[in-house]
Amino acid sequence: GRRRQQGRMMSDFFASEQLRVDLATRAAQSALMLDAEDPRVALTPERVHEFHTLFPLDAVVDEPEVGALGCTSRVYKAVSRIDGNTYALRKLDGVKINVDHNSMRKLWGELQHPNLVRLRNIFITNEFDAASNALTFVHDFIFGAMTMEERYMRAGDTVGDISEELIWSYIAQLTSAMRFVHSRGKAIRCVHASKVLVTPQHRVYVSCCGVLDVIGDKKAPLPDLQAEDLRGLGTVLLETLCRSIEASQSHNLSASVDYIAAHYHPDLKDLIVYLISQPGGPGQTTIFSASARISGRLLEQLDCTYQHMDHCHAELAKEIQNGRLFRLLVKLCMIIERPQRDTPAADSWSETGDRYLLKLFMDYVFHQREDKDRPVVDFGSVVQCLNKLDVGVSERILLMSSDGQTLLVVSYADLKACCERSFTELLIAGSYTHSGGFGGRSFMQQQQPGAFAGPIGYGASGGGRAGGGGGRMGGEYEGDSAGWAAQPM
Image (cartoon, rainbow, N blue to C red; front, side, top):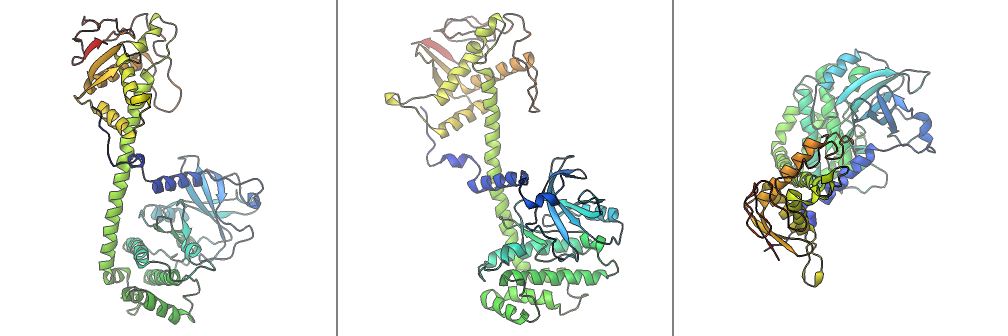
């Protein structure tokens, strides 16, 4: 008999609702476009370089203030016409280029790290404003991200509601990114609350990589630049925990440190003081020595990372199984009750032989009824039956025609063979395409009459005969799909 899967909900077969919402939000952000009445339309060209569908990420219309980069800038979301991916364009005005920007593009483009926003391209264009050229940096677009300043330092936010577990996650990610860059003889140079991005899933990214290497002071010694990175990291952590961009100001620094000491573990206060004060000097205080001081905390974050990977693999496994069943259903729907035209076999192909068995199977899976003719709606049973068909197990089931005049005992292995043979006939007779276009033609359009009698010849009335195998309804079938019996009611 049929067994129901106990204790499972329909949602158990699909990705979690939160993941679905996150991916839907990502898709919605990819499609963002400006309204015609939006005042930012005047500042947004239709196309720049290879990019189109520009959408400004700055809410202000007026000229932006000079920020951490030492110049004014505007950021746009844009789609590349070359690869179709979404990128962030940062337009800088009135800057002086101190080095060959192409060499910097190549250098930073090769640095790939999960917590760095990768630099893709640098170019100069007047497509933003025909009256002046603008230096433009192309970075990966981080969907759903906000800056640390926007997320944690807005006016009116309460102080102290950031968990210690979360802040250590941020520290682990930022420390990892900085170790990666410093170990390759570079400095990030833009560790600032307005340039560190955080997503709703608490992933942290350092943006604007490579910008100051092009427009900044090229004479600054590398140890000094790396020391400034460390000081910037400590400052970002301090401002985030105190929920104020003013927390790192010299007149507030002592009170800010006291607040952290009163509300968080001493390890956190010691790390921030170590990064900002750098007691050993630029040569002694490095990201490597800072990492050694918190190695235990970093290992705890590694455990969380592995747990998250396990969760992601479990969610992926669900969708892989769903994709496998989707492909099976596509095959079945292309075969069953397929309308054919202009051939004598048109009225019988989809109702005879292998196709007839598959039609009864679909009724068995999707159209069962209980006592008093109540429809059975059992999602678990549907998934179980389709899985057995996809694998082709030896288990047998009883199929019955809609009029109740025909009963067939058949195994899932036989049904799988029927499906494969019928679909192969479609491929032979049609024009196969998987590119998403309507590239195929109607099956049997160019075939000779009777060309596809099929290996099994049972019609809807149960009076056909097996192709080449003999036998009739009511006796054991001895053709290619041996293993099922048929008898009339």
